[in-house]
Length: 124
Image 1 (cartoon, rainbow, N blue to C red):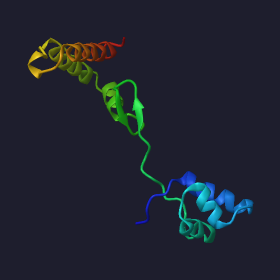
Image 2 (image 1 turned 90 degrees about the horizontal axis):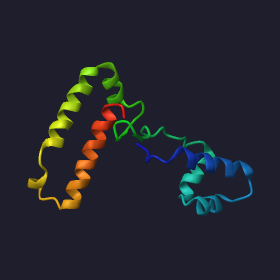
Image 3 (image 1 turned 60 degrees about the vertical axis):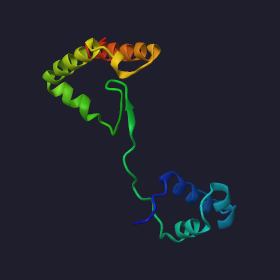
Image 4 (image 1 turned 90 degrees about the vertical axis):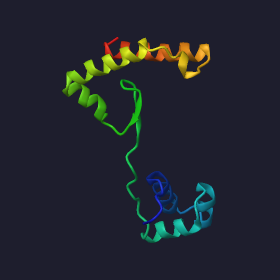
């Protein structure tokens, strides 16, 4: 399987080749790719390979996901999941974090993050 080269890079090589102002070596130097790749693109042997889907940060569930966020869709489809998640987070918030060996400022940060998650689940 060929190494995944970003589609944008291959398109840039094509644009510079069609402009005709730079040699293949010049294009390779400008874009930081190999001369072999520029040659493959110029002869049509190398075409963009669709890469893996791009991950985005879901602000609602605070995770890196491939859109659409499946966790958010599942929560919307099953309100019972939200109740279970709220219950789980409430138990976590009530649990003392002193036994974790955290410094006081880190304990405070952990409590703040837990409270923010509960507030977000409550729609706030």
